Image 1 (cartoon, rainbow, N blue to C red):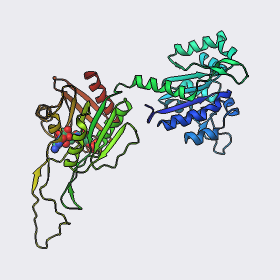
Image 2 (tube, helix red, strand yellow):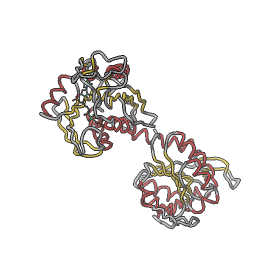
Image 3 (cartoon, rainbow, N blue to C red):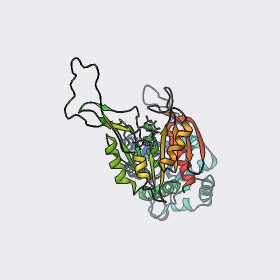
Length: 403
Ligand code: PMT
């Protein structure tokens, strides 16, 4: 669940701060990108060097770099906008009280006040401090802000006493975060098959018939689906794109026949199948085994083509009632009528209609504008925006209709 998630870890000054090195390691291992902000006194318990080595990111504790000549300014507002989650661990009684009151006397507190994401807090202190009504009241205040409480655990404390107050173990903190992300993931448990990119149809060993698809639309759908908790199989035609998300398994193919075979292998396991690839309708009938030579004096040459199978139509014909099939339609004229025809003839539940233009829609661009047409007469226009944003909107609409 943590793959690709941006986690900001806020560490305050208690002995449990030493455990944050292990927490950072666990988060990074789980695929998260981690940045750390320390309160000034946290540096007495754990070194910025350890945390930056483990997180592979700079660690901050003040508004500007007093030690370097550049005196670089660290913007707390930008830092607050960066994360998907803020984790405050360990949170001392003092910092807990400051947060409850909205005080901002150090960089970490200013970052906390600036974040827009969910906040988790794992208090750590001696048992009497933890039991004190002021502390318990402050915990309730943070809970009333909607922050996620990771209770302190029972055990031996740094004071030598034993009782409730030690910071939850890093594994437990990770479990809390994972459980939250799982609950938030609308597509958790779903398997989604996506075709994307162009196909290359060989003319000879060095030439092919292809098209201008970059794979961006399909990759955006794959990334968005994985972020929403789905397991994605992406059958990707020749494209420079890649993903480091563990929830996306990429099968790289070249031709339509290869794309069909890979999609066929994975179709029956899929809950949803999205066909965003730009597939060649025809391929050379007899690709040459050797590079075709130019014939001196021959002004023209002919290439015999043969029709490719329609991947979407072939697979949608075997669709079960529990499966949802989404086709794309790239139209340059009579767009709506043609897309509706494809919706029915290819047995789709939805068609995503788009029309290419040179500047901002269709092939290669980062942006697109689409029109969703459902088999139950739904028609939903999604205005021009980044393919990454559109992908989320398309999946949200599908989720509303097929939950
Ligand atoms: O990759 P990008 O640069 O980001 O560009 C995205 C895109 C423009 C390629 C994408 O948004 C898109 O429109 N994909 C579908 C392109 C297309 O081939 O449309 P079509 O109208 O020709 O095909 C209709 C549907 O049948 C599509 O779902 C297509 O994948 C499928 N098809 C078509 C032919 C074929 N032999 N097999 C198929 O599966």
